Image 1: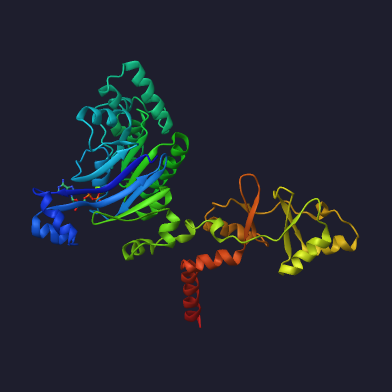
Image 2: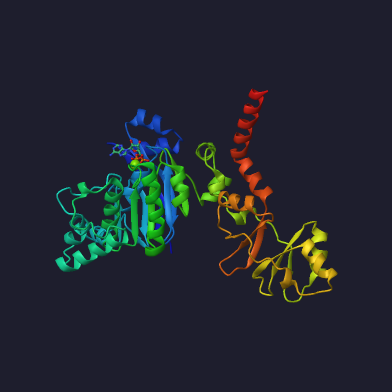
Length: 410
Ligand SMILES: Nc1ncnc2c1ncn2[C@@H]1O[C@H](COP(=O)(O)OP(=O)(O)O)[C@@H](O)[C@H]1O
Ligand SMILES: [Mg+2]
């Protein structure tokens, strides 16, 4: 079951929301509807599912409806129409009491401007929700300390928020959200107020934390790079619509329309496209059965000077070069292990190709792509990586620069 299911959700802000619907049906724009009815479209027929334990990012320009969607998920904003299920419970229909229960036990929110009480200590801020929920003092204190430890703030428990940097204050916000051990974390531009470097750190830390706590996270950002880094899947919003939902790779390689394309154009694809998307089949020989003759034949057949050596379970042992194989054969020896080069460059299938480039420059043979069990999945050669970089414009830009300088010198 999906953690969150949103179906045909609308939010119309204004005095007479029902007046907007006929115009929406006639395909009128958000601006036209505002002009004609005085109502603002917050969300226009949004449908999407968030899977359990996934990092689901909602991305879009300012005013596109992201915060409105997020606030409908815990009904801080009342939807005008549509359904929202948390698990199998339709929260648009639940009572006030049940709603409070859900907010207290199952979801938490992290805000852009931290939302900390300045007069309370860090630990007191973190235990606030538990206190409201009526948890005894000792117990909630213990939970607050644990949550602070999780976000790397051990030792800061008794300080005041004002004594902490922005990044640390947001970690307090995160600890507070984690303190009741919710299933769902709602994060609204949680890192947008932070300096770029601190922001990048916080993104990394959130990913590390997620690997430990496995929450269902709905994360809002207007920054595509942040969305691509954090999201397992991304929903892109425009004028209240959800224009596309997909994995980072799907969004980059297959943008749904010009709006998404415009976002995607300036992104460094090489940070997203992974080794497995560009790798090709490796020429291989198998130990112990294959000897130098098979190796030579194989390399001659495909016109390469190295072949990859695997055992009978396809686990990578190393490579052999054609020169070594010929030499071994001349000596009338059969044991490939003698010429096996086992210290070779390898990478995981999910390594982004920009990380492969430095490796490829050092190595004189393609990089072996192996999974966690060392099974050989394929190889990526330097030319492939350079071609991808080129497509991205990186190389083009730098060579253009070079040509320019050269022309100047002449
Ligand atoms: N309380 C409100 N009253 C009237 N209009 C609102 C209200 N909240 C949001 N809006 C409008 O709804 C649209 C979506 O806003 P919002 O969800 O805050 O966008 P985002 O979070 O993507 O920047 C915007 O046009 C905004 O002006
Ligand atoms: Mg917002």
